[in-house]
Length: 267
Image (cartoon, rainbow, N blue to C red):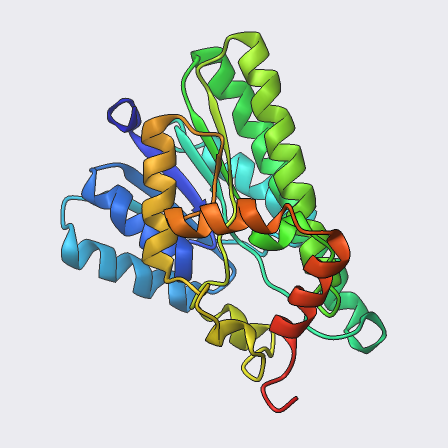
């Protein structure tokens, strides 16, 4: 299936999961559009990709996608490019950690704007083009946190739950239309990136657990999902099996387990 695709746009493409996926797609000779709010990281990412794959076409665009006007501006600028986007990866995101009353209100609202409005607006814009061509793939990065309530990570988990359920719904709608366009919900367990630092979670037990994976694992899971036309994936097969078992536990048990994993290391 990947052989039919020629280009990809990746939000949060300058680091972590987005950057590792960009490398995999560059290896497959796709044109890349990387989007991030950090211009310096974007330039570094582009140089790193071209160092490994000199023939790759890489375009970088600096946008803060927590701002709706910036999302609309991105759509306009991408439309001006000389290529259609075959794969859209909504990967950009961040978290706030702590009890609701202790978190920054404005930061949480920005997080919701980025992960909900940003995902919705970009998907809505590109999916109509993909359906008209009967070719394309929307990859929305959700999280294992989407499957249960997450005290001290409440707003982040709720955003990821929205991404998961919305993506699964759109995937079913496309299937009923008989469309070949894919819509994939990616639900990784904790990933070793700059995520924990930006969320001030360095002191959390979460990233010391055996369920933590590397960005390469997630990138590989996404590639496999596209190739196999899956609409849902928990990267790393044994973790997907573990997640299915965990989902059979009472919700109160799952909340307790989640709280223990999110505790500070000194507790």
